[in-house]
Image (cartoon, rainbow, N blue to C red):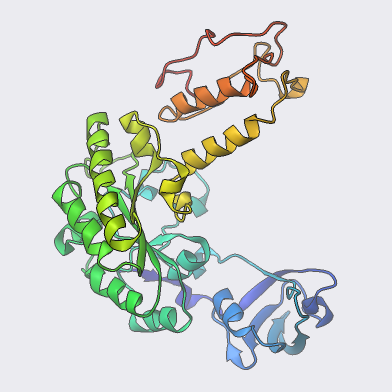
Length: 390
């Protein structure tokens, strides 16, 4: 079950900063104040504040140094209130007790900062920051709040719509909640969702993947997109289920399959609906799709279209590069100049980008930083996956 740590957190929200000259500063609100209520409505978190702070005049109940006081804040038309709030502490976040077979938290090395080990499964962070949540343990009060306050969009870790398979992927939690009825309810309430499938070869691929994609497509436009991302594995998987990455031929087959699904769904829904992570194209040795294929890049932070946006942006910027580039001495990595650091899967594209950085739009070569002569494209480059692809 989900651990609702937030139930133990104190009520209200803490002001971290008040901008000078703002309406909040004029009302006497100070950094460190805890806002308890707005116009008589108690605050549970920053979402409640923004939901209830739309009036022109706000009556604030706050606590300062253990003493309750009040303030009257008058909104200035076209101006922000001038309030910034503290981020939630780990104890104030609803955490996840699922033990997903692919959970990246379980694959982290020891000795890192404590906040990296927090497994959040909080619908509020999904709404505010785009964090993915499982919806496994939302109670009726939380569902009502999502619907009442229209907390949309939400980002949902689906992985599989087959109840038994999803229960297995989530590590066999004590409560097995089918995902589709919950998502259907939210869709009927007008809540938009972005779904994610972490693809684990041999578990939720093949026919199960097709079932998941088309089950979710039946909820469109409530479910706006479905992202398929590869399972991430580290060398720190200890006493965890055995998983493997996609092989290049499997990645190429998946690209072909999803492209066909996109054509079918676009004809039926008006959207491609299902999108592959950039890493899958790189694994397949294929170019990522053109920018228009990402339909506005709605889930770019999930690794869907990052490479395309970077390459297109670089091409535009490279047209403004001078014939000769001079790099400040302090910025040089070595006397000979160095290629950029990159993960092995991205290295071929990074290599092209660095070479392009030395070529003007007219095709003339620019000098390398720290070199007395122009180099040609015959310069040595480490092969993909080699130690040079740092």
